[in-house]
Image 1 (cartoon, rainbow, N blue to C red):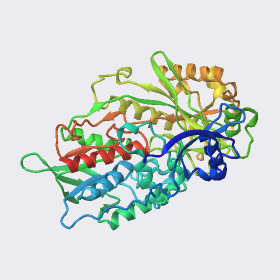
Image 2 (image 1 turned 135 degrees about the vertical axis):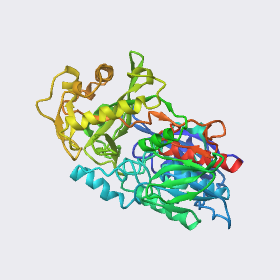
Image 3 (image 1 turned 90 degrees about the vertical axis):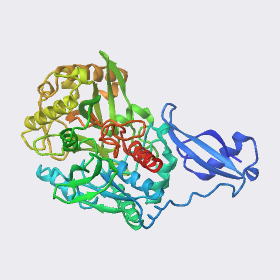
Image 4 (image 1 turned 30 degrees about the horizontal axis):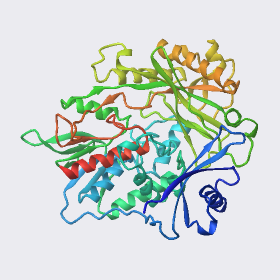
Length: 515
């Protein structure tokens, strides 16, 4: 018997109280509580439109004891003599591909250019405190991928691409809080996610997976007939394997370069670029919650804003309530910013990417050139680094000054640790980005007057929203020029975010298992 799912609404005080949830479920069903059976919350979201806001819950109920208990998932041990599949990258695409490969009787061998998740903290500290960027270890590269130290957001619209709940169940099995199974916008937090990633790796190793850190892959190997035969690392080590899952992140430009050198097709794709905007969290709370903004049970408010300006989308991206802006460059001589939050989202600042959609035909040069977007992206990042003083100090401008087209005489306090330099963003952004951002932000401020806050500041440059290069693949998920190669995840242009990347990794592993 399938449980009946119904929707109930409860106050802030009652929305997380099991007794209140049970009472309201019985009232909606018009039955006595004693006759109700077992009740389970399936989904919880905050509706901020009423005053005060209320919790919207999807609950299901069955007879007492009828719910099947979800036991923790455990990686299946690789059988003796299992075929080795090489997996490049230990972000969500690579790790979830490895989990699924084990389920299907393969032995994954994983390669990571950076270090284990705990050791990455030293790399990140070097960027924050010394403006020193290690091209193999930073916010973007290392075990767990870019999302590990930039938030751990799990919200996705990719439900049609696979079993989202299974991804979340795996994460809970490795130590994530069970609340991610029910929250409408689940989030782990950069302080908790490293523990989950560590437990995931240890589970893979117990099951027979082989892992190689500080192992940047620089070439693919082929046999005498041109077929894929393995890979080579930067230190000269070679590993044999007829199937390679390429699960590098969206910032691994060197991977795109060596694929092109080896004659494999690549494609230019759309992406987005702009700035990161930060407000006092209280301003966003007031904007979203009105007079109830200080209610102690309300979480730090978030927002999602979007419009179209002259045929291109202008939209918020990776919104981080109670968060921080962080330096996300992956090589010396560039400046990139990103956002993150800890689990409690208790910072006094709220930040979000504010970006403009970019199509290859918007850029100077041949739109068919696969690197047209990547070169343009890199040039802007270099310019941001120069304008900030050739350190990790970031170009910045007050929102009100940005809209008025004037340089800020001073800058507000900001969560970005390396510091800010007052810059006219017209010196940084190409005109078609600048003008669309100004018009889009002006529209958002008209619709939401509290968004137009004197202490709102724009910080640049937010450029790594997704890969500007796609590594093509066919319906069988193999590269059309090299059938043993399976492009996967964000770096291949087939995912965006932790959960969608994990789903894509699992999908590729399923394709390998079925081939």
